[in-house]
Image (cartoon, rainbow, N blue to C red; front, side, top):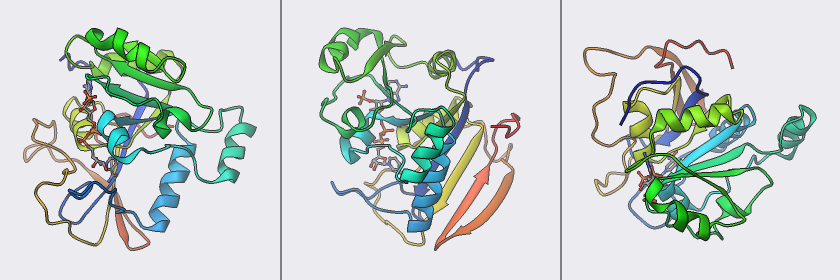
Length: 236
Ligand SMILES: NC(=O)c1ccc[n+]([C@@H]2O[C@H](COP(=O)([O-])OP(=O)(O)OC[C@H]3O[C@@H](n4cnc5c(N)ncnc54)[C@H](OP(=O)(O)O)[C@@H]3O)[C@@H](O)[C@H]2O)c1
């Protein structure tokens, strides 16, 4: 994978909730709610400020999220600003195994973009005809810098990445994250079969290169940690 960051890319904000022992979910088939009501509301306010929201294909298959803004007042606020009521939805896949009835594709009026590997383009186009725009972007896996450059060309200036583990791991290891927000829930999952915040990878931040903690806030019963991994200023 080409790890050079293109000059024109959206501001990338990774936001996720983790358990105290670093898990994004438990190992059951049911979605684990880690966030407090206050944190859910905070993330809703963050979504309003973003042009697009990205999740990995497994998150769509497992959680079936709608990725819409919950607050009607916030949706109206976006419309008043001349924006779509909800941010564009974005996902990426090598398998193309999506059911078009997922809420990602069916809910809301915003654009839905599916970045896929070149090999499965035809299959994915056929499967998602009429519900999403399909964009081939790499031979064996999506080249993230190229995908980000394409999103920028489409007018996306701020991208919210909401998970899961594989996606967050790639964004962090390829070093394209400008802001990292982690909300820590005050309980343990305690099951090694559950997905962790990140998988094994070579990260640009390690014992020799520490990130700077920008802030630590109490959000209901959760702790919100904010880091700015890139040197890009928080201008958006
Ligand atoms: N706590 C939180 O804040 C939070 C937020 C979101 C998700 N989650 C949890 O995270 C878990 C899912 O995480 P996960 O690691 O299994 O999956 P994931 O990161 O959601 O999705 C991984 C999938 O995305 C596609 N993908 C990722 N990178 C790609 C690339 N460079 N090129 C092409 N395709 C790529 C592949 O899809 P294909 O398999 O189709 O090839 C891959 O299998 C769920 O349990 C969910 O509940 C938690």
